[in-house]
Length: 616
Ligand code: AGP
Image (cartoon, rainbow, N blue to C red; front, top):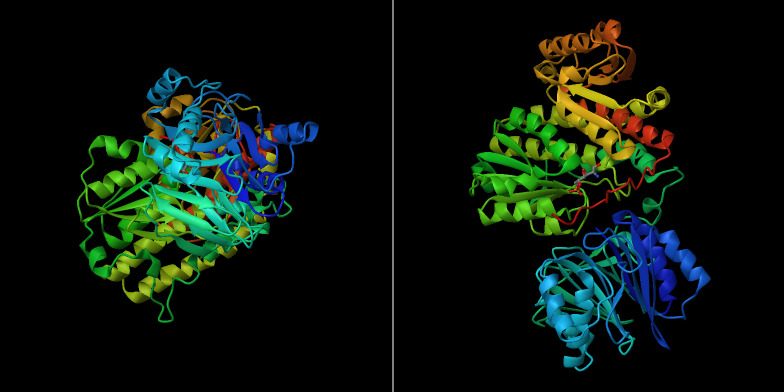
């Protein structure tokens, strides 16, 4: 995933572009570059490494002033993160520059043809082929950059957001998108292009959503959008509700800490406006009729990573409330297993970014099989909701840290709302039963806040365990996906071996991993829920303790029955069984975040990872 910013207006293009790239750096950060259209022609600079490397280079060797320009932060796909492979890429004339997000699948064949025709290449990237294609198309189009872009896009196979400038066309910046994000910011006497709105919301909150296979040309005073064939295209303009401050760290050391702390509000906001005055759920944006929902006889959740873990939790609730069978599938596996999908299947695509390529390709497969697709997404106007039949947006606000936290809790809440809405529409639950569960949900933000207020011992625990080589996580029922999520957080933040298991599965092999001092986190179900499950998990704790494990138990306040089995206890407020993941996950997030800090790792941008994985 890469960060892209384009600008044309009256301000310093470099200042606008760099400020936008800073907001987008989470999208990919192994190199960065800028291209400006100056009075003396095209001026560029690009550097491997984080954005600061580019900024230092620009300080050393300033570029001429310009009011038209673009910039890019990269997450490498083709070609390593080097200065040469950094974007922008320039054509042979040195007048045209292009930046790109995605993958051009047919770039090798294109490059061969271009080299045969005398084009000189200087990088290993797929993107540079586009620069040389644009060079030829620009000449053929008589200096019309937008037409050149349209002609080139029709030759490309793959996923791409492209933005280009040409020194002979200083008044415009041209962009195009297919299977990759690009949004327009409409200003006064200035306009913006970006991978997502956080790049320009400090300048304008008026955004124009671009659709699939569209080309956009921005000038100071105009925005023109067409199809790849040149026909005028429909666009959707909307106001961005996020404040600029919301995308800043708000006083926290890391975005992740800020976002962990925002979880009570994120959960509360996700519930807002979804219950009518009559106490009934009103999910208007769902855009699926009650009749369609009554026909659903199977649900398949498709997602990746943390979103997949949220789907695993949702399965327990939705099946319990609606009696509809729910399968939870890793999106990257879904379409290759020849899934059984038909018009009565409701596919729920869960995605924070709305751009995850694995999930996008899986939902396309589902739609080809005539399933109805509902997206649960946190990013307004992103590709996955745009390509779904319906969407339920989470309202977590911008999640900048690569490790997902508040999006996870709000995905669970949103999935619960879908389950309750299905139960309401299909009559599986009476109104008062649904109202009671909604009350339980509305009680959760305050309970999450209480958990957040007691995390200091968990932070200290991270320091004492920092030299451990392996950490296990156990849970049963909805506690099992919590274990998976706790392990994922520790892996992606502290680069430690960690595994989550169903507690009952341990004796079937994994218990061999347990040795003296092995830290084992266990989420203890409420004894008030299904006591049999509670007692079985306590037995599992005894099993690992007997083998020397260091047991860290997450248990509800008042459950003293676990004290003798615990080396360390993390208390959480009592809550209904299905609500417990919203509380039990929080200490695991804090533990992993603190472990990364103790180890001196980059909490917000862990190695090898990007916030949105837009390649398969
Ligand atoms: C979560 O901490 C990870 N960053 C990753 O697993 C993420 O959840 C996954 O890539 C899915 O992303 P999405 O929700 O944007 O689709």
